[in-house]
Image 1 (cartoon, rainbow over the protein chains, first blue to last red):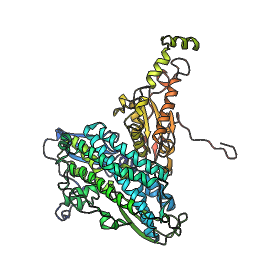
Image 2 (image 1 turned 30 degrees about the vertical axis):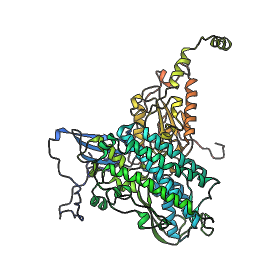
Image 3 (image 1 turned 135 degrees about the vertical axis):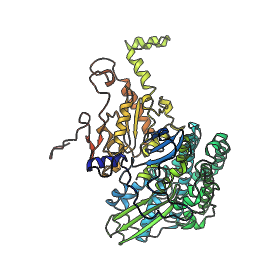
Image 4 (image 1 turned 90 degrees about the vertical axis):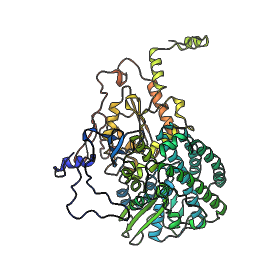
Length: 416
Length: 206
């Protein structure tokens, strides 16, 4: 460990590896406590037991069961996790700084690469913020297209998540193969619509880039019709599987008070029983026109997080059916909206949507110039990851891997 | 051996080969990639190993978690300056013969993030890259094409002579120096044996 008062090169070297000792806590009043949950002090008391029996293990950044380049510094007593420090920054790609030097339009492809499973919802959050900042209305058909593509993205993300989660439990690929089979169907639709499989770059300020190709709606309908059969098969394989139950029930319980205090959003929060869905709360876009339920968990354990996502896929299907039924004709792009050389008036805006992983927000400050003065992303993955230690303490290392899988992180979004 | 005779023999049910062909055939048809993803391209790499694209058709489906058992490193995604020493260390831990595929714009040159202060401008500054696959991200078919090109490259490697590959030479390095975190940048910023900055002379075509 490198002390804080080391000379500059050593300190910088330490900063890049995360080997700097934390500052001692200031002597003063006790740390404030939140409602119902005590905020943990920064410097923790030494652990009980024999220090010789602790084992410090660095899991990652290259490790097959970490999701991307992510490291967990784990202190083990036997097989039990006694401390866990997430270390990230291995995929810090300067997203925010690059966006501050790029025009508003030029940042849309970068948002694709934030959470690379869900490029369309990232687009939506960014475009929504710029529309808020510049006051651009969106045609009705474009809103419907946004809902359809976003819900397809949600289905895709949750399926892949469940695939990876079960992969971490040792299924060695079978559910993952099924999930990717369905994913390919969605990607074919995306490719027909936007020309790209993963990095769609489809939304524009005041609408979408292009209208639907012929036969696309029928393609989505076919996919949506086949989805329940696939889900039933998937659930028959997994939901009551003895091994899955043994590995998930009661593992990594997230109490609702902690979840709210830590700012957890998305399926993780709802699995703890807190009814909070930005689609219902903000009703951004046209989500007030659709009837859908918000699945809630009861215990907040890994099994609930798995189940909430499966149920959300079914609810997304309901939204898709309604959106396809009501899809109106009309323009898909507001002709008054300026794309290139957009210079919003000075001001600030925060736009947020319910991305598949949680609340994805963009905060933009405009100084009237061609590029944002400040560009900030509120990534759900990063904030959902902050409570990883609380979930893992006392569980075995093998469970920590499963808990990490159930948090649903994508490093592109965590490190940006 | 004469090709005509060989074809005649094969019609008679007699299979003839050379040691070199046999060796290269067996090596190129069981490439075990390192189970290692960095960013977006890793998802397409996983998609390539799934049922639809099925990289197993080319003998490369056995993704090994340990570098000690891997033959092929697919650098799939953005290599940041924090990650670059670890990538080089993983490569050094792989046994010879070993190959590197740079998958995607980021691994080739930094891609869309090239302007970033924390992004390595191409993994070929530290590793000898055999195949570059452009795209952001490349489609799984592109990865399969890159793999087939690598197999062709292996098939053409002689076992003896001046042109023999690195793992059969005693003078060629099997390990490459791992960069360290310096005060401002990685030290050294590139491996001068592998990569040199392009010299651009004003008024001259590149």
